[in-house]
Image 1 (tube, rainbow over the protein chains, first blue to last red):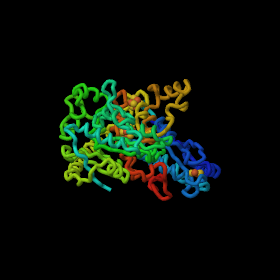
Image 2 (image 1 turned 90 degrees about the horizontal axis):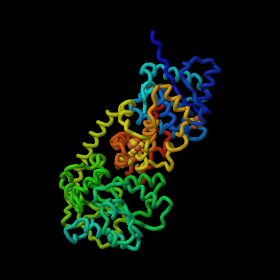
Image 3 (image 1 turned 90 degrees about the vertical axis):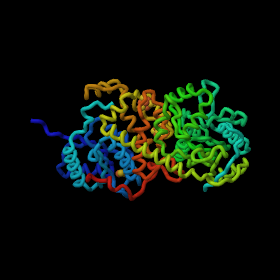
Length: 141
Length: 380
Ligand code: SF4
Ligand code: SF4
Ligand code: FES
């Protein structure tokens, strides 16, 4: 029998909020799928679009950028800059056939362990539905 | 402000009369030098030249269908570090738009430059231009100008660049002074439009006479822009479907050798140092082996699609459609088609148009508290 497709999700998470939420989800023993690789950053405002493009071209099935709610960013507005960059990236990448499900931005506060677990569950389910990122198998020049 | 002026024709030769007009501008005390496409003594080439002595404007050729570089980059060289004098520059509309973008990105200054914009008749790629001047010897610019204004093919062997064929903004909106070519009676005079106070002052000083707005112009421009827009939209459609998967994008770019000429030529590529030429991409030898072991094959040099997508992130909201990327590519990849197709969408996403106005901030330099909430969350 063919093995079920298990997506790989790269998540750039802000140290001050979503990373803490992920930690909380872990310590409160919330169950969420093990498909996510967390990359802790100091703020979503420092996630260079290059990292996201590289992850997707190298075969990550989806990328999540997650930070503090507007108003809560520790660097005042890093998250608002991140939102503009994500808007831009979505416009560019969708033209090259990268589905919206593969590129997500969320705001998850430090105490939102449950929200974090649900977000990952939801993303994994969505990406399973659309299938693997074809960049994983084909030569991208 | 739309004030029209007229300068009487001195003879039959349009180029001579335009040079005479430029001389009168350069003779003003307030203008130290003039940047204008000029015939070089070598090989009939036409390149932007900075000219300080009026009599040397006899080699100026702003009608030549040559467009070797986007002169917004030259203005950046001239003004970025601060220029304590005024100069004038004869620019194509897409050069003016690029200049506007570079000013907003603090790579250029607008104050020292009086911009004289010619209605744009289009240009050849560098290679086609060489073929064209062989065909036409000497009178190439006049022949080109006549043919284009009559709606005829200027050459039997080469076409104007694809960027110019789909350019829907051939009128120099951002100039201080526009020299009109479309929809004016050129045998009756040179028709000039002052678009700024500064433009008006200069036209007054050189003794140009006030004139009525040319009657047919609006109609001619409307039709021209309509035709070009149709052409453009067709290119957008074809290109979008040629690259609608990463696999197809890879195929589109398959000839790319990572020479990065396209970014050197691009006026919208604003980074002073490109990350793709830094140590970040000077990978460890073992890294290449690890990569190839994952997929079995690794095209070298690597990171080609990565480079182009990253470049789009940086420049697409500032792309002015000048076509210099295609002109610079040694492998004839239709880059302008690709970059404009993407740029049109990214600029629309931010309700922005590159080069439209000095007052609109570049989209990635600003943000608002309330916006784009539709892209936040995992719902689709
Ligand atoms: S991407 Fe090409 S068309 Fe756009 S501004 Fe740069 S050189 Fe000109
Ligand atoms: S100029 Fe052409 S070959 Fe050189 S990097 Fe750009 S696309 Fe590639
Ligand atoms: S500090 Fe969390 S998004 Fe800026």
